[in-house]
Every structure is written in structure tokens, then in C-alpha cells.
Image (cartoon, rainbow, N blue to C red; front, side, top):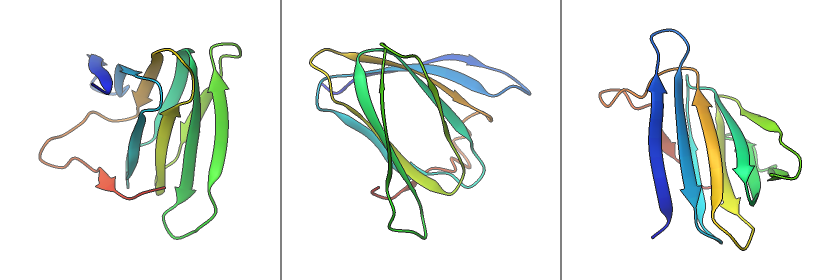
Length: 112
């Protein structure tokens, strides 16, 4: 109902690549990582990426869209989310510097 998430590629030393889709109005994320850096690129649609340092109340917002392709870096220690603000499904490419490890997921829920 929210959309989809597909892992494209896992590499030994270059991280993990994925694609997600989100329906209009859907927010994904609201979590942070201690060791994982991520990069987001909206290929289709419009969205707002929000993040804040876990020990701060200051929220940083980036409006992004397919009209101006931009890669947004999500550093460690920042809780983050992305909301589809458009009227169509959004397509997002994600890169993480390390593979997801079920035994040590390094993903901690925290609202932005």
C-alpha cells in the first residue's frame, strides 16, 4: 500500500544499491544509522527529505524532484525521512556505503 522496496546490488566494498517507490503522501524512514552513510536520488516525482542530528531539534529540509536531479547525502547520526509530496508515485534510488546485515542492522527508529 505504501509502495515498494527492491535491492538492486550488494557489493563487497562499494555498498548496496536499492530502489523504492512511494505513493503520494507516504513518508519512509524516521530512523538513523551509526555507521551507515546513505545517498538519495529522486528519479521520478517530488519529495521532501528531512533530517536532523539525533542530539538536536533543528530539522533540515530539502525539496527534491525529477525536475532537478540532485543527490542528497544522509550522514551518520542523523535521523531522516522522505515524503512523497507529489501527486504520482515517486521513484527513489538509494545507495548505502555498507550492506544491510540482519544480525547488526544499524537502523534505529527515531522521528525526525
